[in-house]
Image 1 (cartoon, rainbow, N blue to C red):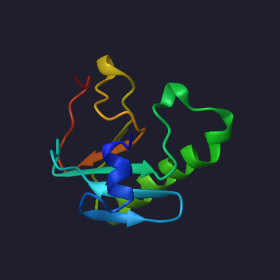
Image 2: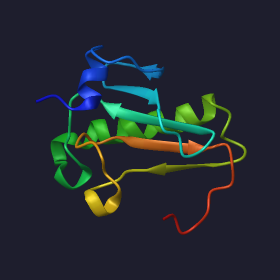
Image 3: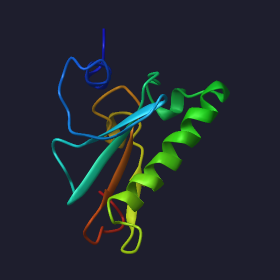
Amino acid sequence: MKTLFQKIIDREIPAKIAHEDEKCIAIHDINPQAPVHVLVIPKNPIARIAMASVDDQAVLGHLLLTAGALAKKLGLEQSGFRVVINNGRDGGETVPHLHVHVLGGRPLAWPPG
């Protein structure tokens, strides 16, 4: 069964795309937690970060580099931003398809919660 994100990647569900390349797609979150909230999603699904393997190393690095480039493109480089990967129910994971949140555009509290 396809995840919500796989359906977006396959264009079965519309999304506001911020970036796309051969390894990932980045979309604006439909329930943003900050003025800028983008999800960077690998096209080849990995259920969660705890299930990633050494074979996923290149795509994981690509996701983080893409997150940084998007933050710069979206004007967050000077003010700052947060990169988040949720894992499991208690970690806030709601879709079992690894994705990187890029949040910014306002001061973000610490600890998150």
